[in-house]
Length: 280
Image 1 (cartoon, rainbow, N blue to C red):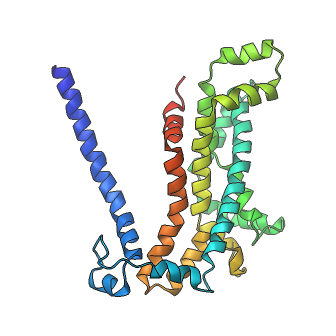
Image 2: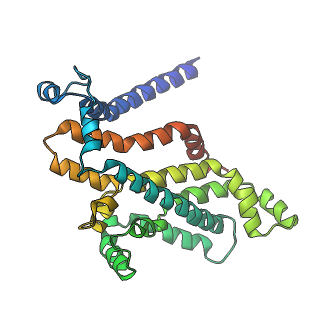
Image 3: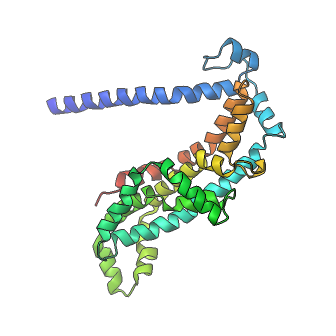
């Protein structure tokens, strides 16, 4: 009974801490959502209120009707870029993770840890070499510059490798006895068992590319606005209409809605993938 009481106390403390963190995280989001539905008069008179006194869609209507803010075009661009990047990234990291977890070759683990150590290098240090590379390859100002360089991301590789290491090696040996080669093992055994981990890696890759701001801003400086991604477009809205808080908040809410919808649909698989990663 004493042990159970201690466990219940710990659960209650954990719940309270998580509740406080959730409230602190959700309050700005709720405030932004409420502000996007407020009238300009309501925003001026009750800026901190979490509930609009008069519900209006004028900020969203203005967002879509302004000729200098083609939001739907920016959103489509972001979907195409982030979607293409996610598919290619999953292909690259799944092959690499299979090599670093299932295949046996000299200095395998040492090479992997050297690759993993690159995550400690600040991103801004790579900006100048990446800009030079995209200029030399003729990618500067194009969508390729937002897709190809990011395929070397290490986090997804680490996630999948740890998951692949948890697959019983007896399954791999049985498949080899049955005559499957490495590609067959990868395609018919490893990938089907790793759907949850692949979904987690896909979500993080999609979110990272969708929310990226600095790199697209550098690449699209001076480029036609119809080529922009949503974060770059939102920065223009925030800079041009910084006095219009309702319009700015409507644009920000519009940017997070797709990611929230994807997470809501896949949350069970995502939690399962994170929980099982690294467990043998």
